[in-house]
Image 1: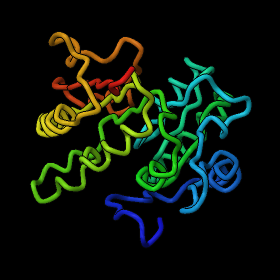
Image 2: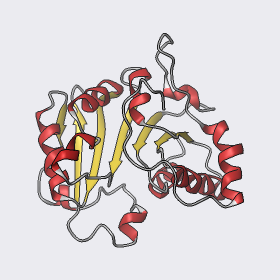
Image 3: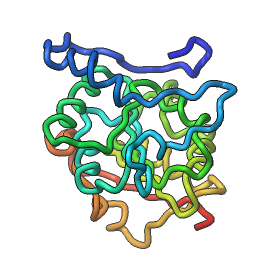
Length: 230
């Protein structure tokens, strides 16, 4: 990440990659990597990252091991999927799924999403996912959470009118934080009409590895907000 960019908190690497996974990082990732727009460059239309161009582009922030992103890509071949994840080991796992499933509609930013959002064209994304991101539970670390007013401003700019922002967590303090900030943002509206709308995963959703391993526990919150104007 650029020294002049936002400060990144968290791990970049875990255990040393096996040779096959390292080969995916060295050889496949460069062909799928999303370029960071230059300061003076024209805004990036994410559809142009794909050939053929998709009907819409969705973004997942912090895709972990990539199982949800890969499942959405397989279920929606007409949609271009961008995944942002700075953790190299998670990126290598997603790359292995791309190869195994022969997925053609995934592009990857192996860096902080805040470096890309300012350079994306306005109203260029149809959906954004933020699933089980680090809740940073200590009060002094709350400024490290992804959901912040300035980040929501960026997401509101790049989401098309009617586009969706979907947030999931098993940390109730994090859920209250996200709900408080999103409910007060002038460009988002909560789509929930009843308790099941935030207690049950979205009907067209897929479990993350975190959920499948039972690490998420029973108290899970699924929040969906719509970009106003659609």
